[in-house]
Structures are given as structure tokens and as C-alpha cells.
Amino acid sequence: MVVPPLSQIVYFRSVSSSNDICAGLIPLYAEAPEKLPTTLIFAETQTAGKGRGDHTWISPPGGLYFSVLFRIEPVVPFLPLTTGLFLCRWLEEDFGLPVKVRWPNDLMLKDRKLGGILCENKGGACIIGIGINVNASIPAVDKMPQLAVALSEALGRTLDLGNLRHRVEKYFADRFFPFVLNPQNLSEWNRRSAFTRGQAIAWTTGGKPGSGTYLGITPEGYLKVEAGSGILELSSAEDVRPA
Image 1 (cartoon, rainbow, N blue to C red):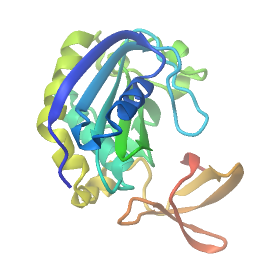
Image 2 (cartoon, rainbow, N blue to C red):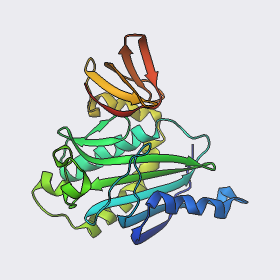
Image 3 (cartoon, one colour):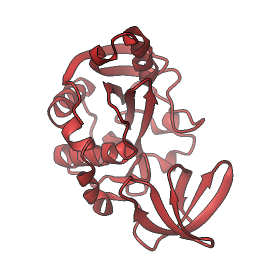
Image 4 (tube, one colour):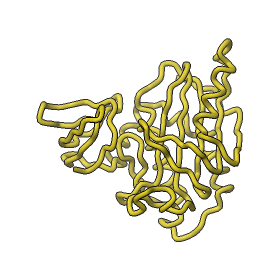
């Protein structure tokens, strides 16, 4: 799978959602989808940030909010996982933080949520939205502040968001696509997963609760669990958490 190199970077002070801005570009290239530019969108704030399902991502000033748009066919199901692993690598290299991924799309630091990922597939293109708590006030980010954490709290200092965005630009331009499109990088999952094999977990699918024993992931990136009905491979589930 080959993705055209990053060709445009756009900054906004405030948007409804950086994913929505990316989605609005896709119809402009409907007659020539191969010309869709690989794009990185940053926003200082979002008024209608998105989470998985019907969840929202509250995006006050002081956070790092961005989306990457690129054309890819076929869409691969493991992108949220390899994106999470890529971000864990970056945060470890730059800040020395042992960030983990809670399947499928939450960035966790010592059982507290540092950020999230939302992948959307539209018209032969993929949009990956990322939100990371940097200097944002945690009570404003999450109604239950003890469950969230910001980089500034973890590091004991305020970060320069401008410098952080420039670092993201370089890191994504040089390394992102070769890493996230390679399924072999799922080999890092066990080391960076927020769950350990044999751990009791719970989840929700289609509004119905479920629980079982965490067994890992499949080669496609599906959640593998042992439940009362046997071994399940879940392609989608919400609110996955320790039981």
C-alpha cells in the first residue's frame, strides 16, 4: 500500500471538528480521487470534536488536536491500533512516557486517559483524528477528572504547543505511513497494550454489555476474548475496560 506523501498542512484556530474539515475535502476530488492531497489539519480548539460511536471529544484550548487525510484502497482494519502504537513510540521517544493503548483507540498513562484516536473511512479515503491532552484543564476535558491526565501534569511542566505541532509535522511526514500501514508492527501490541493476557475485561456492543477474559488481538486487529459462549473476535466494541 502506497500513500502519496504529505502535501499540505493547514492550521485553524477553531473548527467544529478537524475530521469534518478533512471530510469536506473529499467531494472536491470526486472526479479525480487519485489527486486527493494527503493533508494534515491542526485546530487549536474544536466545538464538536468526535469520539467513537456517539461520544464527543471536548477540545478546549491547550490540547493537541489534528487529523490526517489520505487516500487508501482497500482500507485496513488495524489502522486505529497501529496509529496508537505509533503515538506510543513518539511519546516514549520525546518524553520518556510509558503510554499504552487501550483497545482500540485510547491512549492511557497509568490507567488514566491521555488521548484518543478516531478513524473514519469515506469515499475511498481515510481520516485519522487524534486528540491529546497537553496543557488543557482536565476538569474541562473529562467530566470525571481522575480518569484523565495531561502531558503537562505527567511531565510537571507546561509545553509549547507550537513546538509540539512542528514536531508532529516532522514525525508524521517522515515516519507515519510506513509504520501504520505495516501489519507487522502489530507485533508491538502485547508490549504496549493497556490489558494483559488473562485479564478480566468488560465491554459494550450494540448497547449490550459483555464480559470475558482478554486473550489479545487477531492479525486483523480485532479484540480476542474468551466469554461464556466461547472465544469471540470483536471487530467493534465500546467502553472496553477492566472488569
